Image (cartoon, rainbow, N blue to C red; front, top):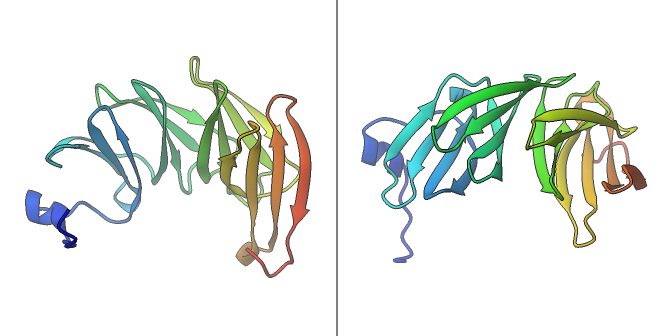
Length: 193
């Protein structure tokens, strides 16, 4: 409100550093949940005073957080074939879902399903999870290394894939979850990531 910016506020408040590489945050249930990637943990802060309420440690390279119900969230994992299932009320790891390839990335919730990208250069899969049962299935995309996903007003998914540094051409895929079909794919020039 004052327009001032403060650095290292967590360390000043807690007398200890938060950790290495805060990758994502989610505000849920009067808490702020931070994914601290290189420190292998989730940190739960009180949304009102920012004091630490709990930590979940160790989680291998937690990446992105997606709330799937009032009491549950999924957390993707860089470098590991994991999706962590987190209880938001008890601040605990319920279970770990395992994927075919490492590097689970961005996720999206649409019409009762969670869609998870897989950035591994060998993977051409998109994962679909039923958050009520945590049952997971894979959907072939035909392109490798999906990493970003957004939904549009027509309830379709737009998926960005590729990794030019690893020699994987980038694509934009328009996917229809209702029919589980690819509507269209655009291929980028080989130097574009």
